[in-house]
Image (tube, rainbow, N blue to C red; front, side, top):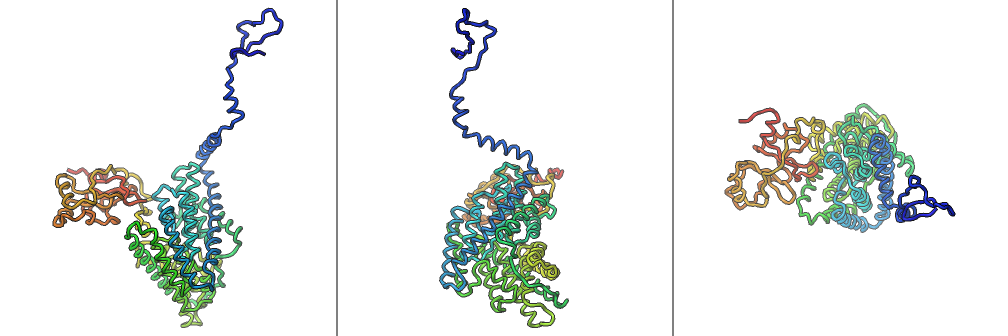
Amino acid sequence: MLFESGTSKSVTVGAKNPEPPVDKIKTVEPVNPQIMTDAVEIPNDKGWRDKLLRHISELRQREGQVFLVLALVIGALTGLAVVAFIVVTERLGMRLYPVGGAPWRRLLFPVVGSLSIGYLLYRYFPNARGSGVPQTKAALFASEGRITLRTVFGKFFCTSATLASGIPLGREGPSVQVGAGIGSVLGRFLGLRTEQVKKLIPVGAAAAIAAAFNTPLAAVLFALEEITGDLYAPVMGAVVLASATAWMVLRVFLGDHPLFKVPQYQLIHPAEFAVYAVLGVAGGVVSAIFTKLLLAIRARFLRFPQSTVWFQPVAGGLLVGVMGWFVPQVLGVGYGFVGDALNGRMAFQLMLLLVVLKLIAVTTSYATGNAGGIFGPSLFIGAMLGGVVGTVAHHLFPAYTASAGAYALVGMGAVFAGVVRTPMTSVLMIFEMTQDYAVIVPLMIANLVSLFIASRLQHEPIYEGLAMQDGIHLPSAGARQRSGEYQVVRVMQAASQLLPADITVREALEKVRSSPVRTWLLTDQRGVVGVINSAQLENAAEDADKKVAELVDPLIFPHVHADQGLDMALERMGANQFEILPVVNRGNVHKLEGIVTLHDVLTAYGVNRA
C-alpha cells in the first residue's frame, strides 16, 4: 500500500492501468502523529479528575445508599481519632507531670501549654477554641453543615496538647466536633447536597461519644437529644451504625475495658432515696454555679481587646499551675481519681476540696479560651460531690445507707444532667458504664431533681449561653418545625435604613430629622450592632457629642432570624417600639441579611393599613 497526499490508493505492481475506478477509491482521514502520541505514550493528567467527577456525579444519584456507607466510614475514622485522643493525652500527660514528680512541673507545663496553644488557636485555628458542642450545633443549624478540615486538625492537635499539659478540661466535647467535622468534610468532598451534609453532623457526634465514653447507646441518645433536638430524627439509623462502628474500633485498639471500674451497687434501705434526692438538690446547685461562673468569667474576657485573645488562655493555665503545685489532683481530666472516689478510696476532706478547686479551675480554663470540653469535668465534680454527700450520709445513718462510692456514681449523673441538660443521656450513660440495672432508679431521682433545680437557678443552658456569647443564635425546636408560610424569610427585603455607629448624636439627628423613616440600623466594621429610633435620639440630644454606638448594646439588640415566625417579629417590634427589625444570620448576629418592616408583617397577615 502506498500513501500519497493523505489519500490511500491500492496499486498493483506491473499493471497497465494502475489507477482504479473513481468509485472504488476509499478515502481515509489523515492521522495526526501528535494525537497518536498523546493517546498512547503520554497519559492524560486530567483523566483521574474526570473519572472522580464522574463517580461523584453517580454518587449524588444514590445518596441514600452512600449515606449509610458514609455512616460506617465516619464511625471508623472517628473511633480512630478518639483512640488517638486517649493515647496521646494520657501518655504524654504522664510524662510531663508524673505522679510524685517535682512541683515545678505542675506549675510550668500548664502555663507553657496554655500560652503556646493560645497563640496557635488565635493565629491558625480560631474555630477550634472551646468545647466543640456549641460549634457543632452551630454548623448544623447556622452554617449549612460546614466544618473545615483545618478546624478538625486544629481541634485534635490543640485539644490534645492542652489536655496533656494539665489543663483540667475534657476530650469528649472536642471529640464531638472532630467526629462531626469528619462527616462534614467527607460529605462535601463527595458533593452531597447541603441537607445530606447536615445530616452527617449528628452521625459523627454519636460516633465520638460512643468511643469517648464506651457507651454506644448513650451516644445515640445524646446525638438525638442534644445535637439535633429531635428524638425522632430520620437519621437515627445512620447514627446507630456510626455509634456501633466507633465503639467496635475502640474495643479493637484499647480492649474491652469500661471507663470506670465500680463495685456492684446495692440499695441498703428505701430511705436512701431521700438521700439521693438531697444529692440531686446539691447537684443542681453546683451545676447552676458552674454554668453561671463560666459564663460570667467568659463574658469578662470577651470584653478585652481582640489583640489580647492569644495570651488570655495563660490566665487559666497559671491558675491551674498554682493549684496543681499544692493539689496535684486538680491537673488533667482526672478520671483516675474519679475511679478512687467510686471505689471509696478517697478522703472526705480531699473530695470536698476538689469540688471547689476543680470548679474554679475548669470554669477559668474554659472561659479564658483554652481548647477542651466540660463533659469530663462535670463527671469529675459530680463524683466528688456525690462522695461528699455519701460520706456524710453514711456517717449519720450507717445502717440505712450505702458506701460513699455509690453516691459518687449517682453524683456523676446528677451534675452531668444539671450542666449539660440531657437527663436521659446521663441515666443511660451511667448505666452503660456500670452495667448495673439497680442503679437506674437512684439515678433517675437525682438527675431529675438536679435538672429541675439547675433550670430554676440558671434558665439558660450552658451551650446556648456559650453560643449567644459568640454571636450564634441557635433555633428553638418550634422555629425548626415552623412551616414557611409565616416565616420572616417570606417578607424580608434589602436593608437601606443604615447609620454608622461611630457618628455623634448630633450628626445622627441631622440625618434622621430630614427623613420620614423613624427606625434606623446602626452598623460598624462588624456589621449591624444595634437598632435605634428617632425618639431615642431626641432623648439623647442633650449629650449631642456622644457616639451613637454608646446608646446600644452591640451583643444584645432587637432582631429576628429568617427562619423565625412573623409573630416573633411583631412581638419584638411592639416591645421595642420599632417599625423595622434587622434580619441577621444565626451563625453571626452582626451579619445583616435584610430587614423586616411592620407594614410587610401586617400585609402578610392580611391587615390593610390606612
